[in-house]
Structures are given as structure tokens and as C-alpha cells.
Image (cartoon, rainbow over all chains, first blue to last red):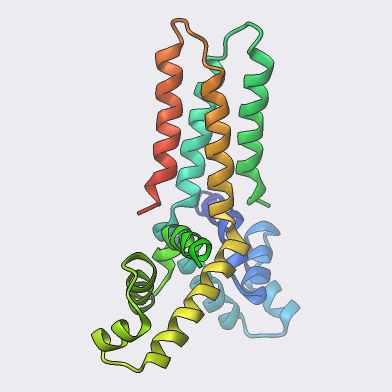
Length: 114
Length: 114
């Protein structure tokens, strides 16, 4: 379950702009805030089953977006490459500039991520 | 018009996995193959107006995806940063490894692009 939570949180970071408000809210409560289905159904005054179905559909959508665009996978690959880059930065007058560039690249990765 | 064609081609590269087959086909004919609306309507045996409406809707979808995910904008920003990185690669025993890493990063950018 923990593994799934981590994955859903990550996919949510990348694809949440593509979700509807309701999908976003339910998923936030369930995965980020760790609410139970019962608690979410009470908060939004809908059946537990409706919340369950909505969350399952949203999870499937997130996996489908990842299958099509692979943003999370590429993000992980880039971060690993940036780490390798850092180990190769020479200790000379280029050091500051190079580290700043890598830092800018890393920040660009986080931009789309909440 | 040329500017719009370039932009639509670029957005298409990033977001085409999210389009339906019909949207993809019409847009390919119109922007990549430079067919006229009349030629597309003949090929698919639909009205010129239907093709026009479909293409306009797809263009709006592509712009909406870019507004939400910004993949094309980030792609351009990353490519510029990779160019800057290359100018700072030292001419010593790190050179080959560093250039290979930057090359891998650049190839990763092209992966999602047709």
C-alpha cells in the first residue's frame, strides 16, 4: 500500500492539472491527507461507493497519462543524470557557474511539481 | 501563419499521445503534410466544415495542454541550459564523460518527440 501511495502522490504531482476539481479533491484527501473513504464521503456528502469509484477511475487516468507521456519516469531519469553531472564538476573557475546551471535545471524539474 | 504552423507542430510532438486517432490524423494532414481543408475533407469523406471545426478544437486542446503542463516551454528552457553546460565542459579527463551525460540528457528530451 505504501508503494502505491508514493506512486500515486508522484503521478498526482505531474498530472493534477489535467484532473477535474472533484478528482483532485478526492485524491488529495485520500493520498495526501490520508483520509478514509468514509471520511471523504461524509465531507462531500456522497456515498462511500461513489468516492471509491471516483478515486479508482482517477488512479487509472493517472497511470494512463504516465503511460502516454512518461513525465514521472523522465523526471527520475533526469534527476539521476544531474547527480552524475555534479560528481564531474571540476574544482576550478567553472565550478560556480556549472553548479548554478545544474541547480537551475533541477529547479525546472520541480516547477511542475507541487 | 508559418509561426502558427511551427508552434502547432511542436505542441503536436508533445501532446499527440493525448489526442484521438481522428484528431491526430487531421492535424497531421493539415500541419505536417500541408494538405488543404478541402483535400482532407475529400480523403475522409466528411464536410470541409467538419474538418475545420475538428482542427480548430484540436488546436485549442493543444494550447490548453501546454498551458497546464508547459512541456514545450520547459523543453526549450532545458535545451538552452544544456547548450550553456557544453560551453563550460573542461578540456581534461572529465570531458568525454561530461559530454556523454549531456548527450544522454538531450536524447531524453527527444524521446517523447516524434
